[in-house]
Length: 181
Image 1 (spheres, rainbow, N blue to C red):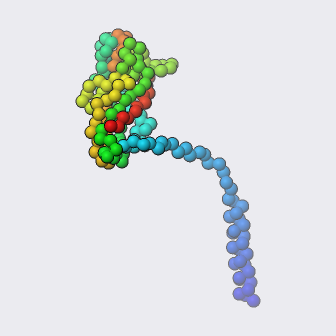
Image 2 (tube, one colour; image 1 turned 120 degrees about the horizontal axis):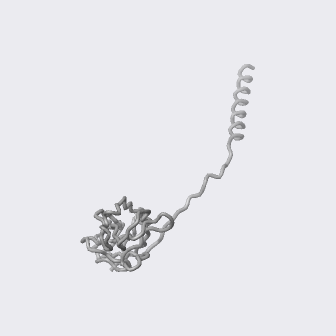
Image 3 (cartoon, rainbow, N blue to C red; image 1 turned 60 degrees about the vertical axis):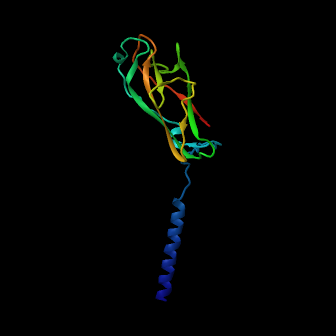
């Protein structure tokens, strides 16, 4: 009889624990997960980290522009685009075209600074792998591809587009297309 009572007590405990656990469980909405991507029919795929790239341009002093339009700042930042899974039987080269809003009077220079608190008189100039200026909407020199991973190297720097530069945010946005041949 003692074993029967113990078995009943143990069974009762397990049933109570199961009931208690079920009472505490509750589904709560946690959020949203967005999956973004593109299926492409190209020789390579752009690395996910470079599809929506952010380049920190840093701070540049107004005095660096010397009060003369067309003066580039000394500081330049890397703008690398990594290509994955390249297949040279599909294409042997890749060239990039950067697109965006050109600065008034300097259409090849990316307009910088928007909204309240924006810098004026400054744009962003892009450079190819040799350090030569690469104008907006102009295809870069083609880079020879190898099978596998390739990195296309570019640089960007501020340039004055007016004799008068005022301080403020100098953010800009460009898109890019890749031409495989």
